[in-house]
Length: 275
Figure 1 (cartoon, rainbow, N blue to C red):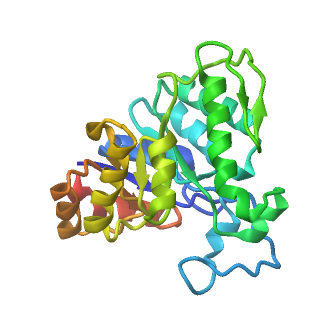
Figure 2 (figure 1 turned 180 degrees about the vertical axis):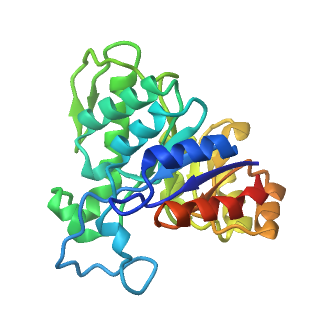
């Protein structure tokens, strides 16, 4: 099983360069970073996990800048977002960022896609909350048009682009795409339409949800062997990882603490037994 990691990198934590070097030297498979552009101080949306919003949400580094640093000091480490709030980005600019990072890293980038939970944050980006999922779907189609080998137009209700010359292209034509979110028909429809798999946060409840996703995947005419399920932000224990392996899961992303260099390196020492 490939063991990757995720962490809220901030202006107060270990740096992307130090962490990326340590991950590659220790044999970890990858580094995935979350994003929040800002957290409105007058937020009324409750924190999805309950309780007070952890302070690191207000201090996250830009994921693409941080991953660019990580790419520059590593050769094998996979790089990803967990997740990119696609509705909060200009899709033409985002397509360029993704293609550039994937090109410069030699095809090591995975785009984790999410729909968001913070209504006020999305509103500041001009997102109509009830349309955010459809907006993400259309923006993903727009970006794939820009990554196509020949100039390709896309015309949707919420997003469009003319046939364009857009380089560089992602190293493999398009990066791997994994969609995060809670299991259900709506999420599974997004995964089967434009993604390579699912990022189930915390990795709970997979015994029933993975078969349902596989059924939806095959109904959509997708290759049964191509579906990837990658449990995300997992706090590991041997029994949990064995349970994933029994379900055919080949990759898991472990949660690191948003701490200083010493705290993060201690966590990597503790996780070494799972490699």
